[in-house]
Length: 229
Image (cartoon, rainbow, N blue to C red; front, side, top):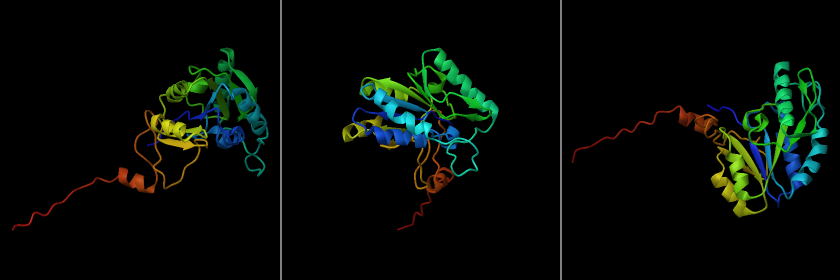
């Protein structure tokens, strides 16, 4: 069973920021953020933090909102107005304790505008709980150890992404990230049926995907014929 998440993207100083910004816009707002593996947290090196915000903002603002039956629409309304109100309240709480809305932050009924929130602290709901809405929280870090600690500071562990051009760094995150799915140089919202799809911690148990789901639901029995000499 797959449960919730607040999937992070880690952005190292050597990352291609244009690619990162594209990935955030693509994986943080699809289906109005109502996907368990949507990008919810972006944990970026302080060296590139301001540049990343600047690169991501126009891409998020370019996401067309409105009627989901319109082919041009990229972000439609949430499942219910009460959920959009919840997202609005969580973001308001974050702003009240020091976070800043970079873009978005407004609501029309069940439609919550694609939102970026900067300077988010780990204890804020939009960081530590599952937001499940069209907003992404940005938090800076100063060291690799801090980035790993921030990424793993969650009761969830379904999916994560890291952007870096350094193979050693990528492999360290692949080993130490507490997530069932880790993507190098793309966001967490990506899967194929051939993948073993599932999480760690409170993000469920077992794995999806035809082969792995079959294995989870199969009792293995060993039968041995002992033949006489």
